[in-house]
Structures are given as structure tokens and as C-alpha cells.
Length: 530
Image (tube, rainbow, N blue to C red; front, side, top):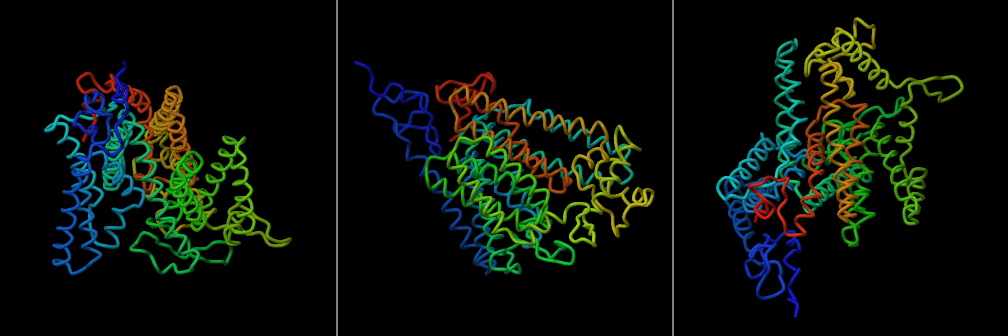
């Protein structure tokens, strides 16, 4: 007679269990007594986090007398304990922190410095401590670090020839911090469950920020900034029409819209692919909030990227009747629901737009950007191999602007294009390295998708595809924006670089085997952390 529990041991553990069955054996080993169920021990281990949060809340409330600040401190303490107990949860906190620009908001609006740096260092210390002290080493794709390291080395070369060394050092240090985030994400996104956690982190963060912006747009109350997570400023929209442009947790509306592109891509995929209706509703809410945020930003570059997303999804799911219904609704919304200011700005963004039979208007922002891009091209022509130095475009802008007789600008300006900025500051070498980073990222997406399809993980493959689309849309918007907030770029790249090794580990996880590519001395069973 066959063993009724045979085969159960090869099933992956529940996402929030610690890899233990009810009788205490690890997943991948057969339980001798009963069909396996997730252990309740995993839930008991969360008690220290709860007690720590309550204790710190009480202490902070007495010390500061400020309920909001006390709640924030208590939440930070609970997160620290949760990460210490379950390091894989640090993926959630890192992506929430990056997507909401938490470190910037905390310092600018609440006087809390170095929050992002503290989180990165703490997570790194926890991962190293778990590996060194507890022997719970995680599978790590060291090859994925090659292109980020090359990127930093290329920037560091600027220290030998850049005119403004202080600016170069500042930019280099900022990118090192951002690339450390990518390194942590490569270490944390090791299987499909972690990929789903990353996706839902983006969906939740973007949904909340988008909802705050939606409230501002619908109510007209842009003075309410929700603690710095929904900022705005009045700018020219068309001609003499000025209106508030929402920028979420960022100081610039265009970068806010760019940061919401990954959210909309992943949320739309989950809206289409998720089987559970509650999850579909959450994904739909996040998608609509993200689209509203992009519209409220009046960003033309993000609008172009969003249109590309719609075109791709129509082609990708062209045989789905439900999708065509969504297309009809989207077109109706574009015709009837979009603000007239938004439609006007999309038209006004053309270099020359005939608004009447007599008058021709030119958008000053477009004219200014053309001048800034022209200056970048001239810098590249004068310094084709290594550029003027990392972070030195602004230091050289005024000189090139005067030499070329460009539009007069009252201050140093940025290149307003990631690709032209790279060419101007780091030359051909910088373009090659940036191309290598993007090639490795999209190679990770494509190979991960192919391997997951081969393994029968169609839903996970679709999610990997959505991550790739989100990164592609971000790079489309980067045609019109430089890398002022590179932490978003490197967080997306970090996840993308980790994707190529997800499928083999997922197959090994389902079979209860170790994954050889993770290293001979730390197989999958050892890599699963409590």
C-alpha cells in the first residue's frame, strides 16, 4: 500500500511559514506522522516584534509627547525586529522605502536624517549575521554584480579628470548607496515567492501614493501634502494657464510620473492574471491610482510611456474580450474624463503648434530642454571618450550655452536626458557600460521568463514580463529625464538582474532539491531562512 503522505514533502512551504511542517521537520523531508501543514511556530516568532513595537511606542510617546512621531518610531522598531527574525521581509521594507521616497520625505519634512542608509546597512548586517552566525547563507548570483561594479568604476575614473571634483564625489557616493540597494535586492529575490513580494510591494506603495494624489486632484486641496508624500507645485501647463502639478513624494512632477510606470505595469499584469478577486481589486485600485497620478503630474514623457504600455497590452492580450472592454473604457476616459489642461499640454508639448490661423506658440520648457540637450551633444563632441566627468554637466552648462548661443538660462541646468547626460559626462565608455547594465537587466528578464515558461510557471513568467515592461517604460521616460533619482532605476535593475536564476531555484524548491548554481556548499535547503 502506498504511503498517503508521499509526495507532500516535495511541496514548497507556505510563504510565511519557516519551512517547517507541523511535526518540526523541514520542508523537503517526509513527515512520519501526518500530512504536512504549516507550523504555528512561525507565527509565534512574530510576538517579539509585536512586543517591541508596543514597548517602543509607549517609551516614545512619553519621551516626545507626539503621537505621530511615537507611532513612526514604534513602526521602525517593529520593522527592525521583523527583519531580524525573517530577513526575507527586508525586501518588502526596502522596496516600500524606495518607491515612497521615504528617506527624502523623512529628512525634508520630519528631520529624520539617513533613514535610507540606515535601512540598507541594517539589512546587510542582518544578512551577513545570519550567514556567519546561524549558517543560513542565501543563494547569491555573484555574476549579476559585474555590470553595477563596472558602472561605479567608470564613474570613479572621473576623479582623475573632472573639473568639479566635489560634485563628482557627491554623485559617486550617491550612486554607491543606490547600487548597494541593487545588491541587496539581488540577494533577496531568489524565488517566485520573493518576486511576488517585490511586485506587491510596488503595487501597495504606488497605490497609496497614487490615492493621495487622486484625493488632491479630485478635491482640489493641494495644500494637504500628507506629511510630504503628496507634494505639488504650480507650474505652467499651456500658454498662460498655470495649475498645480502633483509630484507625490518627489520634488519634481516628471520624476514622480516616471516612478509610477513600474507600478502601473505590474499592477495591470496582476489585474489580468490574478485568480483571487480581492487581489485583482487591489491591483486594479493601484493601477487606476497610478494612472491618475501620472495624469495629475502633467508629464508628457510618462504619458508617452503609458501609451506604449496600453499598446503592448492590447497586442499581448488581443484575443481577450475583457481586455477590449477595458480598451473601450480607457478610450472613453481619455476623451471625456481627462482634464482639458492635460489634453492641451499634450498638444502644447510640440515644438510648434498652430493654435489659431494667426498665432504660433512655442513651449518655453521644450525650447529650454532642446538647448540643454544641445549642450550635452556639444560636450560629447568635445570629450567623446570619457566625457567631462561624472556630475559635471551642470558645471559646464553655462559655458556651452553661451558658446552655442542657446536659450539663456538663469542657473546651471541638467541634461534632461539620461542618455545624453551619460554621453556628456562619461563619454563612449559610459554609454557602453550603461548599455551593458541594460543588456544584463533585460537578459535576466527574458531568460527568467523563458525558464519559468519551460517549468510550467506561466503566472510567474507573466509577472517577470511585467517587470521587464516596467523597466522598459522607465527607460523610455529617461529619454527626457536625467538620473536625478537613480535609486528607482537601481531598485528596478536589482530585481531584473535576479530574475534569470529564479526559475532553476523554483524548480529545485518544488522538487525538494538543492540548486547547484547557488554554490556547492549552500544548497537550497540551507538557503531557506526561518
